[in-house]
Amino acid sequence: QTQKLTSLAFNLLDGHRINQGIKLQQRNHESHAVKKLPDAIKFFGYTFYFHGVLAGPFVFYNEYKEYITGYDDKHIPCSKKQLSSALCLSVIHGLLTAYVAPQFPYIFVCSTDYQRMHMTRRIMFTMISFFLVRQKYYFAWSMVEAGALSTGLGYCGKDKNGENNWSKVKNYDFMAIESGSSLKVLVDGWNISTTRWLRELIYERAPLFCRTILVFTVSAFWHGFYPGYYLMFLTFSLFTFCARTVRKHIRPLFIVSPITLQLYHVLTKIFTNLALNYGQGPFYLLEFQSGLLFWKPYYFFGHVLAMFCVLTLQFRPIINDKVNIMNNVFTRKAQYR
Image (tube, rainbow, N blue to C red; front, side, top):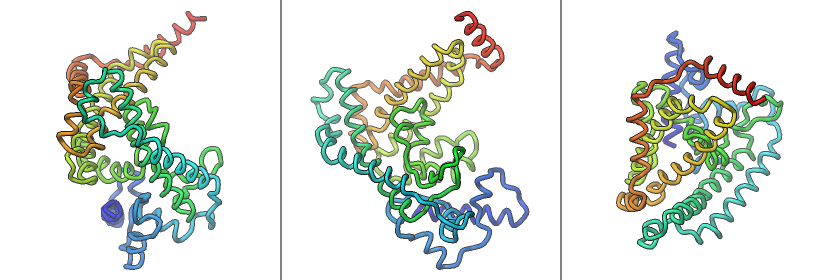
């Protein structure tokens, strides 16, 4: 309900500005702007519609209104294919949560036995255990997506291939999370509807210098008051700054041949997955002491490495001459031939 109420408030503000002749900077702000205050029935209908009242997925008021009043083509297309896929995925994620996850209890990372394990075994256990922890979120998101699809909510026209697009109710991208090539790809694939809410209400409206840290802080506050939430989101804000710095200063060095560029993508996939499991630990453990206990056997290496990259790479000149870089690529390609 927090997402619905706050988004409607901002959408009403945008609608008021449009009515006053003020041009909005963002196109999505214009499309979601509500120019007239909804009456009580429409307001409570949006707030408490049955298939989105508990676990979402979140949609903006105008998207809900379009669903209620009818789409542009005057009918809701069949969502059987997408619905079947969501239900099958929910079964898979549910079975992994119920029967496999208990074999790798994530709370084990706080034990002395875990801290005595060899580093390689610790990392492998963490990757498997936290992957299985995430299954319960995938299960819930698949179920609510199936619920929305069964009622026709979330249709957004045809995609570039002419297929029906139901992406407005898609709440996660499994491959983007588990094998994303960057933190941005990972974050954009996790809890997608909440990411839309944070991006439109916070990120796109906040001052440039504090956008990232403000988004992660608001996200932590929205989740609750467990210290683990704040440890994770502050850590991910640091990792985000680090990833941007590395991409800006280091990636151009790899655009010298297809082989080195592919190597860069492989390395970023590995580091992104390691950062995901390292940073999410306190989120699952909740308590402040447990979060620090999880990081302790790694000597807080993730934080140290991220800080080192941010501080040292700031003094490295940025390679902006893309023409020279691409010429170098073409030259090397010719040499390979």
